[in-house]
Length: 393
Ligand code: IPM
Ligand code: MG
Image (tube, rainbow, N blue to C red):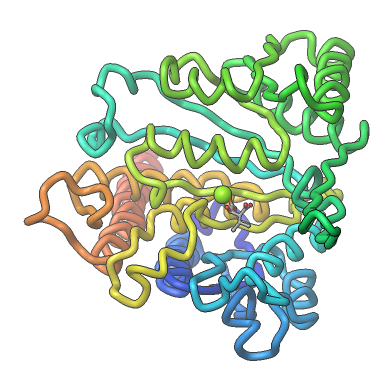
């Protein structure tokens, strides 16, 4: 391999966070190390605090050192944040503020959430296998705007308490996310579904107008459809194979991706990539995390599904390090592992065959490394052939 391609040196910040976060990040890191040794790259890992773990250690869910660590790294791999320990409704600081804060601090406005069910796992989804044929959805969720980041107030009046969350979107925020989604659609089936609630919300009406204009001006080759979010919630279940790329605002994207995860069989399988603007050069600021939460009920038991985190590491290779071949090698290794039935509890349809986080990870690593041996073998044969050809002359 190294005869043909340059090797990459990269610093990767790891933010394990809470619950099962540390377990799945450790798994993804082992897979990245296997990739580094197979392809001759050098990945340096630096760990930082976020979420509840950071609150416990420093009182702050997003310490400044963590922001600096992420800014100084080529990419960020995150586990999960949150848990009952920090969940009091009156808490002054919350783990989730760490996650929202790092998304905002790094300008990660585009959250990519692919949903592609594995046929061999159809039994762990509530759908008939035929219903899932051809399902390949990419949800592009706006991640640094909307109601998540608007003003929040709690006031007291004589009549009781009044809570307010403000939802704001600017034309610019909508334009840039639509461009990301349309570019991605271009490389796929060229269909874009924009999801809003334009029959009720002012932000959605601006969203719809802006999407229509951007697509008409610059993406006439992409077929655009607008869909109300309630209809979309129904269609995702009813006719999932009709979706290609879905673009939507922050909160709708949060809700619809948990729903869409049911198609895949388990939320533990799904990765995500949160990207900033392309800053020049091939590399791009990015944070990679499974879409599942901290699963405090199984934290520390060694049974969490590491696949969402491992596939997030594949996205990291693809988008932040521009290592597409390496990303595909990881995705292939995961597919072989799943097809062999090496599965954690959440996706196994046979309770007597359930394995641990570690066993799944080791199998993925073995496929990443085995592929190297296959390649080395091929390379050996090519060399031998070439040498023979030379000696013929
Ligand atoms: C997600 C999560 C987060 C979100 C929470 C933990 C703040 O649900 O990444 O989907 O709502 O964005
Ligand atoms: Mg969510």
